[in-house]
Figure 1 (cartoon, rainbow, N blue to C red):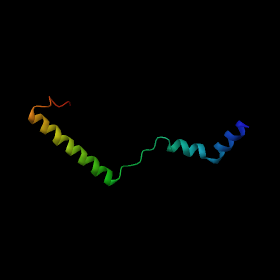
Figure 2 (cartoon, rainbow, N blue to C red):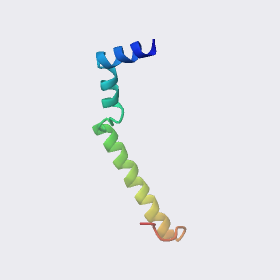
Figure 3 (cartoon, one colour):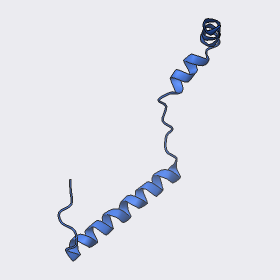
Figure 4 (cartoon, rainbow, N blue to C red):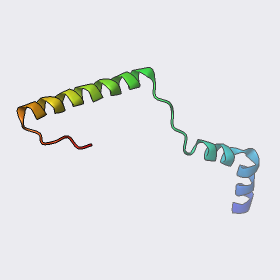
Length: 61
């Protein structure tokens, strides 16, 4: 019974399409890219501000 099921899955192409989609990563949308860029800018400004106040040691690179 299991062999029949496996064979039907392979013949229908379901297994092949599932393997193709397994590691697919969708491209980020423009909105996501903008939001990510804004978060990055805000974070770097905050780090610079804390450095100037002396509350943050060196920035890790």
